[in-house]
Image 1 (cartoon, rainbow over the protein chains, first blue to last red):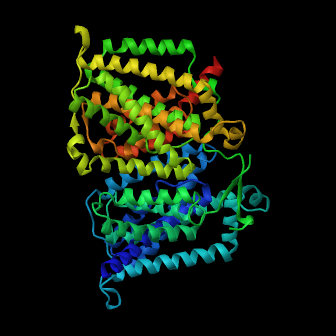
Image 2: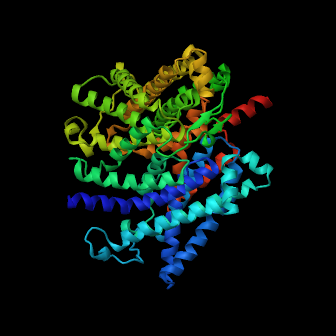
Image 3: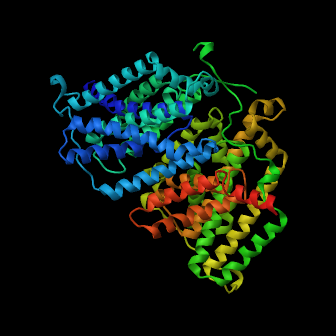
Length: 292
Length: 333
């Protein structure tokens, strides 16, 4: 039983990261209707920036805030320069654009900071949390930050004018334009926010997986899976999906014989597909009604 | 879920509607290309012949994806899995059962057809990004499945299998590479003609009706479930044959040759060639074979970045891929 509780708690802790990633994925999906395959690489690049700032002697939280601002502006810049011209192009062309962005960021990070694995500090320490052996303070911190982030986003979208404008621009762009919302900039803003959220996920997971240009590969896949499981139209669903995927991944690795680390991912994905077959819009997604 | 929350999607489809006449080349152009493909190997070195063989093979794999996506409007990131199944079928049959390499191709095709048809069943419920995720899962699982212990006797586990390259038959004075090139060329032409005719047939029209709009298609009496799974099956079969040829050409199969990277390359090939334009598949194949080499030549450390920039250039200049160039050329002349 203790093993079970342990695995569930560890699952919740990694799930917090997937939840952050899923949140970033859902944000961009809401804004532009595409999955951003380069999300993980953007987060990785931001994390490297914060690492570099700390190397230059800036304290953790200072570097954290500067990185957030950098990621926000970077996300907007990528949208304005690279993806705005593609807005009218076919969907699959956009996906190819994301893959190109992925290759560019990954290879540039490799050139600037090379491919050696780097230690990344945690602001929460790694002592046992509240004297319990089950979960470390860093894991508790990750869960706490994710919950705070989710609450913050909820209030932003529900109670601010700009949050309302972003929701309007995402759901009915034509009508939103008619009431005077600059939908084009709302999309850019969505990119900026998604990029900033992604960078938080990157900085939180870097102490666990260590810092290197390919660190986000696995995380992003789980993040996508989480977002799809929860329903791509629901930020809340994405977060729940993240925690579920984290827990399931850990339990499958522990209890199903012969699974081990190698087959963890396929099994997690198989589970998600079985869920999707029953609920095609995800657990919390809106049902899309098609008009002929 | 309240009714007010439901979203009505109008005129929003993932794949553009390409009329079937716009899917192929004219007779004249086809004959010129064919003549060039037949004559070329005489003048070049063996390594270049090998690369041309790979171009045809990847072209076939991209063509298969094109039938699935450009034809029936379904999206797949799992083509590498079908490619792997085809390659392993051939390798196992050749090395364990001593079956002639040419005979393994149809067997691989049938095996992959079944595999794709079965995979198409759960995929029926999914569309768009959800289908992308499901096929993606297949692609990530495949290398792991091939490494499983109880299959190791057949698949050779992580080490993979070595495949013998066939000699030219009837004592023809040809190098192995050149023979394999002509063999691949014949298979490619056969499959290409089959694909063109398939898309022109009743089934092809059913695929396209489903791609353009599923609900009216079913109202017209198209069995949507059957044709969607059929498209998956046909696509998988062609990819599998490409995989078999690939295994013979490379003389080696190993689980890690068939990762998600291969599926992504094939997808890029389709986009660069133009979704729904069959001849573009071979243009796309040339892109995914040669551009990474060019990128490496420009800068070793930044090869990924150079590749990304080149890809961006292509999709900015021709967002509809090589098809756009071909159509522009046609309307000018």
